[in-house]
Length: 225
Image (tube, rainbow, N blue to C red; front, side, top):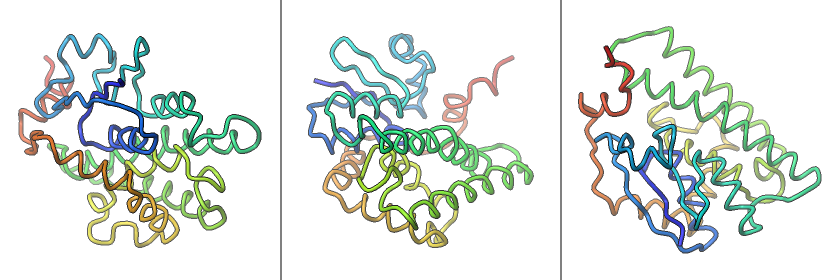
């Protein structure tokens, strides 16, 4: 059975979605990152970056959400083409999400909602990059059913995890400025696996308040002497 070290934030959620889509047997191991549980030495021994998600799949340990998605796709031979032009497209869009859309979304959320100082330049810089990445994906989806091509894939799951946070970035408007992206997000969210994943995250009593304890847990380098 796969062990998923989990917190209900965007990156673990996309892995939870993949596990639900594949029907693999798994067990959730909660890691309350706002309490600093990701810094426990036992966790760091399998997650050198002290971040969730991590999976233990038998003797195989995989960290980084996008590496996990690829691993599970290859283990199950599902949700990712294995060769040809379709494989190239899938990898391109998966890593577009991994190296661009995801980190810029995270930084935008940080400076909009978590930074102890109001830094207009940082807010503008990161939010505008989120907009730019959304524009690129929306343009792609105006010509393609899914990010990776004709078939739903791990690239779409990777984007879904972060698109769930669009209201946190853009308020009530959410994804309304990007109709093709909004459509894709809606289609994924209506899938039974996504409905189950969203329900599962509410089964755990994780810390909710972003207070000084949470800030120190998430950003310990900001408090180092």
